[in-house]
Image 1 (cartoon, rainbow, N blue to C red):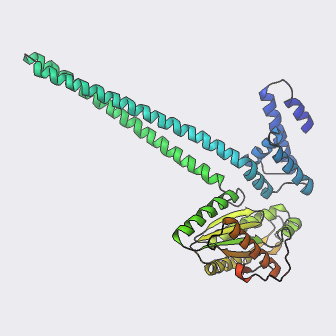
Image 2 (cartoon, rainbow, N blue to C red; image 1 turned 180 degrees about the horizontal axis):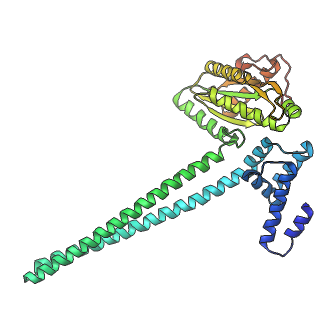
Image 3 (cartoon, one colour; image 1 turned 90 degrees about the horizontal axis):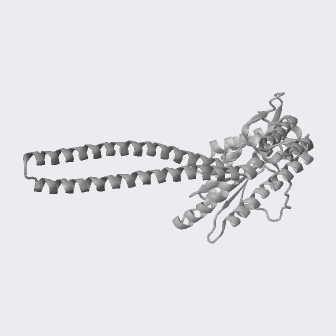
Length: 363
């Protein structure tokens, strides 16, 4: 099917045939793999079929070769990595151009208003001079009538300007909301609806600067789902996606004052500004208990998959340390929790250095 479609694309039948051929490949892949036929999935497969992003094609082909299918989690990750950044950039540019046009229009309106005021000022000056030199009542009456006409004209122009400026204000306000929506979308993980890796990196960098300036603590939690690969292998990727959504939801309900992000795969991060490592430990325990208390079942059969548990590493920013340093400390504490038996919380200063290190994928 792909070979035939690309043959059509290579013909001289025009851009419309090429577009339809690409669309046919995209829809064919969605049907073939039993994927959701939503705009995000279509956009991803359209980009795949168009062939402009070789890295995207290579990664999709690799996942299909390894797993035979793409999960919703895979779709969300690929979309966030390859489509969302360029789409967000394009959206920013589109809205930015509209906002620039709006500013230009307002500038032209103000310029026209200034010209109108200058013209009215000249009419007043000329009218004043004419009134002073009037030699009869008829001449004076004519001067007054001209000034009244100019004043009415100025009032109409002012009313028109006021309406145009109000219309422009409404449009600018709408554009401001659109820009904010695009910004939020570019920083959100599509599957779990928490912050994505870009959001995490940006937030952590700014939090470190603020903590240093205000001399307050900063604590980082790394939360990793235990035996996540086993869930995917035994119950399917859809169940794995449901587990990721569950963990994200429990994180949001357990963390009242902090920034949550999906760090990658089955790992989440929580940034706690102005919270000590001991407070971080309490919050981490609250997260762990909340997630463990949920019982998940397979949608199709209703069979229980058992309790979902997480391992959590906790670290605190120390003077003169960087984002990479606090991330490494939290990561080491997380894997110490794995070594300890999982479903537990470990602080960076209580890592058992003598324990053998285990770094199994999806552990």
